[in-house]
Image 1 (cartoon, helix red, strand yellow):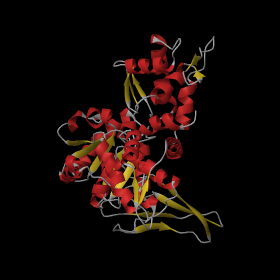
Image 2 (cartoon, rainbow, N blue to C red):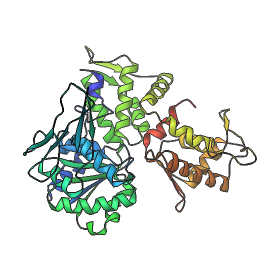
Image 3 (tube, rainbow, N blue to C red):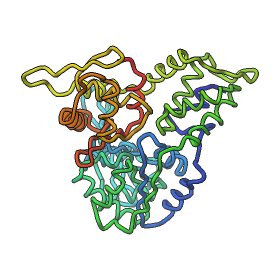
Image 4 (cartoon, rainbow, N blue to C red):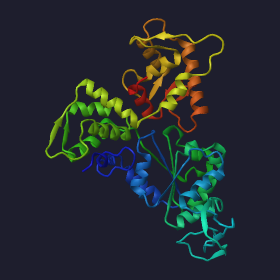
Length: 418
């Protein structure tokens, strides 16, 4: 058996899947999907297995997955849906005479959907003579409740991942159409991060009482450990318990990251497939450090890091340089990112926690008060304006808390070379 089949950070695990049975997540999602007229809302931390849960319950073949990233206009959403269904409004076939054909299919439901092989109805149009040289699909056409109803009639279940990234005005319009489509029998699941779990209801208060909510909590250490306990015996590997504990700690509550570390461990020790006999394995501190640094290739956040650490263009005087106790130096943005990498890996830090970490890292003349807060505000602004859907961190000015929705970013800060 191949190691990359046992440990799969990129898709639904077959051998190391943990359904977290005690939480009954699969049962609850199945029941929510079976409740006619309701929209299902699945929320949880980033990289916590929300989409994997949907795929496990619904099945890959019947799940129509559309991501919310980049949807600033409603027409973009419908284009994404039609593209997933491979339903272009028209197919233009160029010929030697530069003429083209237009084929349009008409289904019994009244949708004008071309070249839909399973739809009933006729195909109208004309085909020019000549040898075809290429073809282009245009994904425009029917949308709204009509298209959502078609999805349900053909046995698909719509899963809108990262619903919180969709523009507010678009959310409002979609929520209204989702409500009507759900009433007509289409299964719709919206997926979002925990602190944006009520976006669908806020977009349309009429949905209150029509949304079945499933919140996926952070993964506990013993739940992450199940991935190792299931996977390594299949490869006849027996890592030291303390080593697995370290893998769990560095995974920052993310099953995807745990899968990635376990897979990289196999690669680093040269175990690409099941060994002939059970083999105990341990790593010294140097080898462990190499492994954790190598895993950053599966958790690359360099673009986000470069934007945040650079900060806004200085006005007037250059920023003050601070000297860390490890011999390195940098401005307040550099120091704050170092503080996130310091100590135990966590995804939420108060201003007081950040300040304490900074003082531990910079023994003499560390950044203080207003300077730290202003830098945190600028970091949050840079993420929102320049990184779009890649929200690796969010600063809450009112609560004075820094949230890191993406555990991969914390991992990158801890183990990338910078």
